[in-house]
Length: 234
Image (cartoon, rainbow, N blue to C red; front, side):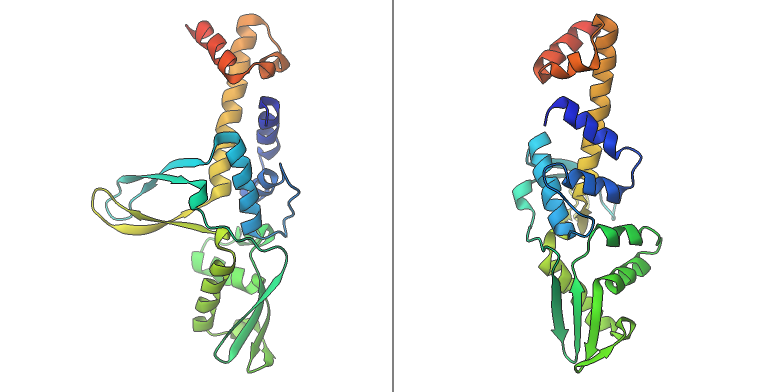
């Protein structure tokens, strides 16, 4: 991706919801629908991120115990990936059975109306489960017992693990262990946004110094642009 394309990508996502931005990022290299599974969407975002910034990730996470920050450093290959494409799945346990689809961007958009995490999780299952049975007889989704829904939630994570990436962490200060959820769409969008804003600042500085147009600046290689900026800001 060249500089102009990166700025265009950032501009296209500015002012959109995070769900829309996720689809925009995933659609850059391959057509992505809101109905595609989150695992499939996230895999495409990861491919874009490799092209833009490489496969290594670095970030910070706050310890829930002492409040200090732990460094996150991992590789794209560390992430589990097994996307599902528009298919229904069946899960049975005991006398209950459910037919469901893996969560997608439309489901995420729906969940944005909930402030309570438990309500959001219940709503997600209600949207994803398309059929429920008990001993072969159809029942309402709401009639599925909590124990079965917990098993179903675990099964959905197993079927599409890249829909929600979890990273196990240990605090270097107090040794508390916790699980951090890594949202690849939000992470990559922040990187794209930062790069887009920085690029426009470079255009501004070089245009003032040399009278160049935006197109002139975009044609410069990153190393040459940096050299000009160092001379301007010298």
